[in-house]
Length: 115
Image 1 (cartoon, rainbow, N blue to C red):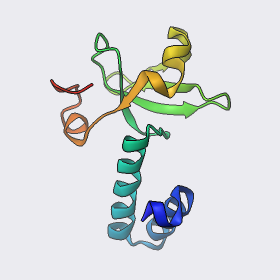
Image 2: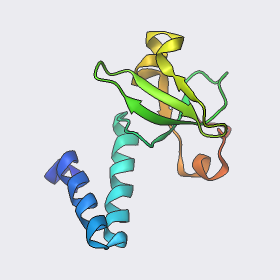
Image 3: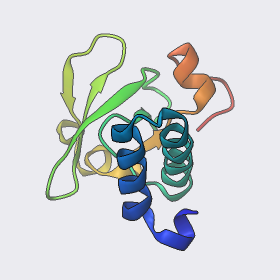
């Protein structure tokens, strides 16, 4: 669907369905939007992510995307903000992050065999 109508229109449709009370349709579109973001390396506020560097095992949540493209995150477990640019440009942009899988979100930690 996203390839046909575009990401922003699909996002708007999900929001409209949710606002009208149709949470089932909204949820289905939101799931498709998340899969699209995972496949295309797109991040939005609220996404659960991991650092590509496996030394960082904590799951993070995207809290802000700055105008210059840097991504601000906080730990999912402790909640305190961690500005991702403090690690340098590599972690300041999306190339340093990878989306958490559904299973990882459920367990709250990185699973073996993932990035």
